Length: 172
Image (tube, rainbow, N blue to C red; front, side, top):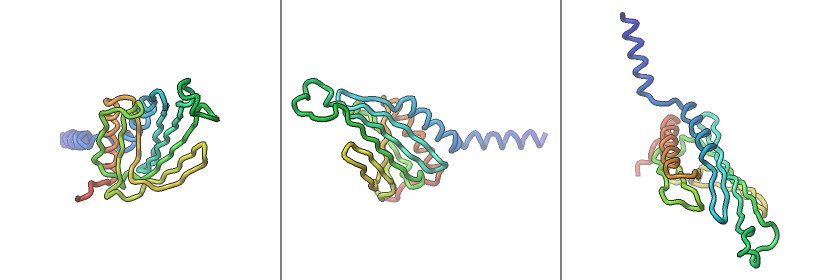
């Protein structure tokens, strides 16, 4: 009987803890793959998020299709579609666990943009553009999804993952 009671206590404690880091990051990865493509008349974007423990990498495959529109023909030269690949990486413990989801669309998508504690430039970025690569540091990551509902779910999961990795909100 004592063993059964101990098992019930351990099971209840594990359920109260919520999702594990792997379950949370797997959810974010799969959910963004399913909901991270969108666009408007000028842009097409597709997001992909990967994790290695608490390390997070976001890849944004972005296409500028504005020059493929007939009304822009007179101001465009060269390629009708320009492709950009933006990659950003950081450790989840460096992020604030206070991520919120945008509820107003920008470029046809809804954004989740976790920031670093105290706005420190701890996000490594690498962008491949038609004009050459750009390497930099930033204070935030950007993940785009196709609906406000999807943005809320990604924000909630990211907050949980940041907390599991030891991320804490800045004091001020």
